[in-house]
Amino acid sequence: MELNAINGASTYIIQSQDEEIKRIALELHEGISQNLFSVFTGLEVLQNNMTNPDMASYAQELKDIMSRTIQEVRLLSVELYPTTLTTLGLTAALSSYIKLYTSTFGIIVEIISNGKEKTISEGKSMALFRSCQEALINIAKYADTANAKIVFTWNQDSLTIEIEDIGKGFNIEAVTAGNSCKGIAAMKERMFIAGGNFQLFSTIGKGTKVIFTLPISC
Amino acid sequence: MLLRKVCLVMECNVQLEEALLATCKELQVKVSSDFTGIALQQSNSTDIKWPFVAGNCNEKYKFITVRYGKGIAGKVIATGSPMTIEHFPDNIIGKSIEYPIMLAENLISAYARPIMLNGRPKGAVLIGFRKKYTIQQNADEVIKTLIEKIEDLIKRIYNSN
Image (tube, rainbow over all chains, first blue to last red; front, side, top):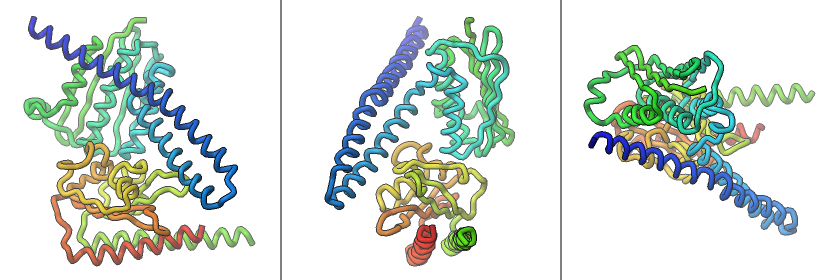
């Protein structure tokens, strides 16, 4: 009974955190970004009507800062909540994230997709997206490898995602016993909430593999 | 005639780029670092790349692009001030994933200084170590001289374009 209450509480915390992140991301994208763009175009109008070259040059500097800020806000919004997840689906959202991942960490990720992609609920998509993100970040932080592979297998009633690297690997028992692997616990919890399954395999010197399996209804 | 001019400019740039790489290696040898890299802001955007490195243990640096203000190079360029990391990832500003070059090259200690172009920071030089290390004070003069040489080479590349 007590365990159920704890699980319920952590489910509630994760879900409300996700909802809050989504709200902030949308506010940044649809509110603040639009206002900043209005200021940017206004500056452009003012600059075009300036006769003093020093003032025009100052306006250009302000425009550059504004352009950089718009770009930063846009990227921050996408990092917080990938809108492509609901518009284009999980594979597209993860492919887009992987492009950003490679240009951030220099790790090349091969993407393989088997079967036909099916529509899955936003909650389940988000659980998978966040879990994949966590697994890929762990590769960048600990695996010491330049390559990774992600395989999507779309079955009739389930989806399996395997993320594999041939990095340095680790001793799962030793790491999980230390209570320092919050990322692994978060992936496990997210998959549990979504009604899925999480498996982790690792061999020192050979690499690590995580498998997410999630039932999907047609 | 125009083609010949373009070829001459390209040839000149190749020589300057080779000189930059040689200076990067010289800096690595003179301060006995494990890794030395030159990060430069792209001419058409504010993004930063690592075009010249020495002592790298993989090719990840070729794909890394950091945003203005992010990562060790981005922070040095945005502030125009040097930055030191004593024992990565302890006591860093932000998360370890915000320092991709440190993760990619397994660096523990690092020292970065801005590269100035026309009075503005346009790049950064990173001197990194794969163990905890403090740069000796007498190395400061060597670093300063070689960064001036790097700044001069970069200025010539910009002017030739």
